[in-house]
Image (cartoon, rainbow, N blue to C red; front, side, top):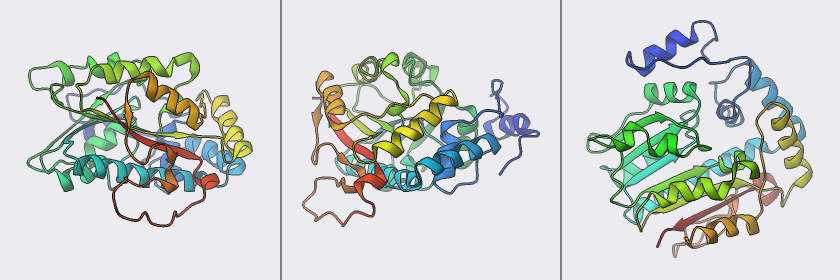
Length: 291
């Protein structure tokens, strides 16, 4: 783990001399670094650990949620790559944890392009330092906030002469374990609509989302802890996610909306027995296509 002392200098070094990180407050927990803690990673700081440990105290299965969600991401990205998708916009990237989106996609499509974006500059510094593309493919990293989709869609990396993604061709938007930080006040329909409206027909949405359907006491207690740290979180159920997908005019791919521990890519293969129960995972997953 890197210490807080000298962190800003380290960020500038790993990110490249042309990038100057904004002011970073290491006295407050951040969601990506807490998630890294749940996964057993080492890239977190004292406030992240302290808050994450309190979450574990009220939701002992949160580590299983994180691992089940990660497994869903792997299956979903691999499935779309198998279907021919070779461009991915990964929003809320988080601390790199192998296999990352580009490793999964480029294993199937070596020329795949992946644009990683996160609002946390520490995450981006780690991404720049640790993630490398295949020679045929491309990966880029930008700082952007999902609550303000224009910070992503209007970024020079998207609008310049050599854009990271070709928006004339289908793109898969990965919103994995991030939309539960978009509260009703943030207007999730607006956020999703802005992203999907910018993409052509044939684009896809990969979405996973915490739900309180299976372990309401634990999940709601964890959400209250996040809220007290200035990190509002909002669980949603299957009906709410289906409503968001319908409002966007998207088509759900098989197997539809399922707990991530039971989600399989809808192929003829018999899905393996789930590693976790619905209550342990407490997360729903889906893939939807823009017709």
